[in-house]
Image (tube, rainbow, N blue to C red; front, side, top):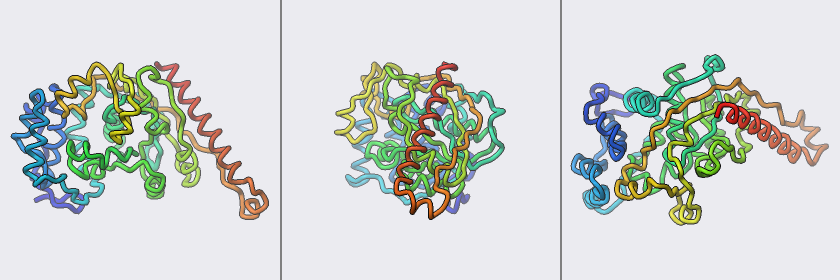
Length: 345
């Protein structure tokens, strides 16, 4: 047995990318198999998918039968969450053994303007997030930065990626946490920054990926928390412009009302949806695109905090003024990033 981040894992050696994995890479319903097979190589997972069920993924409508078989096999219950936490070594193994062929051969990811990359963190890496699909623009950037600098990065992710029932059946419970995902909640965001993490952050939040094809490469409203916390912990912001992420799910539009009913961050409608209905395992797949990342110069926020306690007492409007200053900085940052996108697109 080998030990990874304090947890005993099954794999005695590195995961080998075989002909079957290459087949899964180029056959869209097979991407979910890639993720789960890699997990099972390193983790004991009696609740996970098995080979019969994997085979059913690959035929039209077979996923539904596979889901029924697994549900009956588990005694008509959800897969159990084993309480996993972030495992940096598993993140590295997943990056080297699964993300590498996907990013290099499928998304053809590349970093531009690498002279703007600092040598080390902590950092808030702020990027335009889009695609209305699985967050491949963030995963590809994490892989490329890890390859270039050896950084351990953690992405801020919506709650649906952690505990939505669809995700729990698709992927092993705890998968997002093990790979370093941080819930997009203020307390967890701040706790990660307090630990001097290199954090991947979408300033638009979910407004970015769910805006739809008609607003591609148009930045939506930025949240203010990253400006405020960057100032509080004196952590610089590294802006990154991604081109190609809008084409991960092209011609897609968001069905807002239905998305709310299913408690999803977005529910796309496009020419691909009939195929997805036949092959639900394609939920982690995206269209082939060339993902290019343009690294911008570091951005350091201006201090918005009051200078001393007396000033706070004397000015009742200090907190309101602080928020106004933070808002102006977020707007200025957004405009600057939008200008860069417009020039590069």
